Image 1 (cartoon, rainbow, N blue to C red):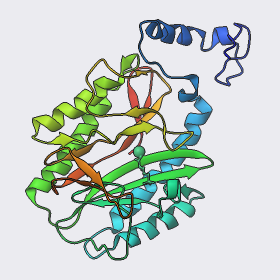
Image 2 (image 1 turned 180 degrees about the horizontal axis):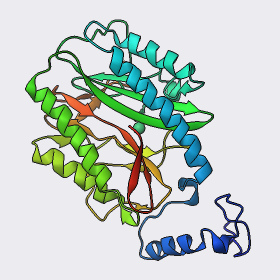
Image 3 (image 1 turned 30 degrees about the vertical axis):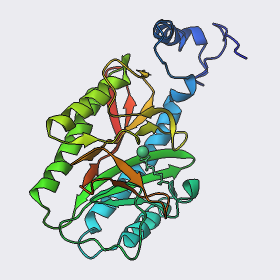
Image 4 (image 1 turned 45 degrees about the vertical axis):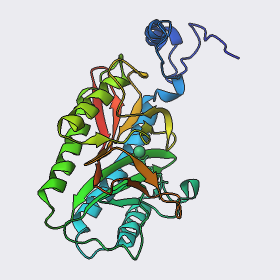
Length: 291
Ligand code: MF3
Ligand code: CO
């Protein structure tokens, strides 16, 4: 059942201000898109200033954990050691690693090397060696608020082909960030990401994408990176979502390990890279709040 909010009622955003003085005009603007058949976000996807502040605190932990990983990673380190660092550095800041026990995921972080696209499970038996490229994907819960970002690390001297893949994937994310503008559609961001990958001879994974984030680990909308401009959900100020394309050196096709149920690999065995940021849509563009 849907009750229309009264103009003199307190606004749904929790500001304590009357609706007519707060989000009424904002909702009317959203409705102009809705009536044209464009998918628009529910109120629950629009974060209040108080929620944004809490999510920012969670992001600060996430960034600190990734910084710690960057300072200690290198040849000879096992991915289990990375998991230990992430667990310790997270809990020491009063937070919880979001992946731990998430849908049965057994560890605190995802570590994905070379042809592993995402969701690699840390292990004592996997030792980083010179020439590897590895994605470390950290997600944090602080006081119930979620943050999510990932970085690529190059271990020792890496081939120029892999180095280029890592660099171009980062550029894809930066171009995606620049394409996030309020009152435009998500596909604009996706197309910017995809175009840069294709221009460089790479492909983008279609089946796995990003997501809204903040009050839950994975919120709506699902965020793909191969969609066309002017398609997908309308972006409005206060929304938060991840930009986290997986860019493959070869074909886009992937498979999930049948034994562990998590590890995703490229079908052709060629390397894949991923960077992940969380953005907050603002009145003028967006702000990267977790990187
Ligand atoms: N951190 C991943 C993301 O970017 C999700 C990992 S789910 C896990 O959305 F269970 F594998 F940790
Ligand atoms: Co994510």
